[in-house]
Length: 404
Image 1 (tube, rainbow, N blue to C red):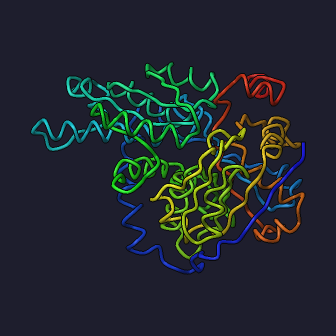
Image 2: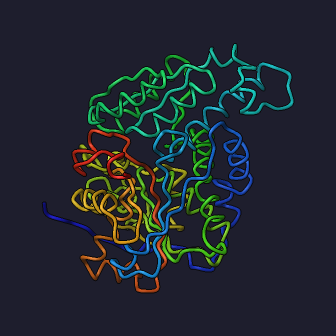
Image 3: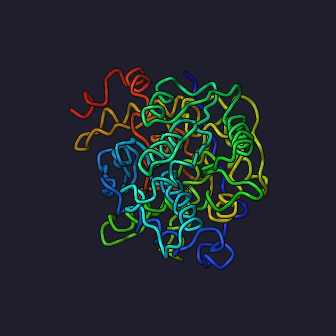
């Protein structure tokens, strides 16, 4: 299989010492991140996802340090998405209760306990998904007691559809790609009075995606506490998709480390590189076509309006990688370097390593991204084996066999 990769520096990147500022704080801010952490950490089963140090792989890639935030165990959903979609569902229901009842505040604990079950049962949440976000929304709906309908495009695997249905959601299949499913979900919700819980924002739809993105910030808060002495990495590689996760991590680290914030590199598939092209152009660019890639969670052709407001200046650069590198990354994690633990990562979850493999093979990319022997790199392991059948086909073993 041929391998393709390309990288750019963001011509609109903010200087290293530029303050986060009031304009960006109107999008993502400390109050929003703190509120999300307070609620999510109160949910049953909450635990910080591990931050794994990979010294053997760092040596093989000629880096000083390599860290991997392993989200596979997050609330049993095998994905960081549990942090965003479910948190937004809780906030939808919280606001419904405040509208209908004369109470001062509503907590996640009360929703989980069924204190306001009569209101929750009257509410239907919906979204479009490539798999992981829909699973989170479905899980949140089950946890907090409301109805859920999830739209998937025709390229979403049966395993990912079944994983969503496992949480009691109705799954509807839409012809076309992810963006077609987004439009169908929005139209159906409008016709039925449902609430769209999406991590994709667009004109007139911002509040719920902001809740999703603030939920994702829990990952960054944990990382900042887990790194030795709170010392920032020099580089962060963040997968994009619509850009919600990347923007949330970028914003949190900018707020937390300020002038010491790391270089922030956005990772995308070559066939769905909307953020890459948008950074190059200086304005949002839509990528059409099937967007077909094994990195299913990144098969998106339009950058979220809110994510763009952060990434347009917060991203240092971007790299686009083809599927061959993504599959190599999954296998590399499953067959670790001496001294490193095995890691179960899906094709999307391993895309940061895929970018490093491309940089290893192409010195010009390594130079563009400023990777040298002193680089301390953080990868966001956004998912594990979210489709166990596909994972076994790629690796040749099940996740349990890899970890054993």
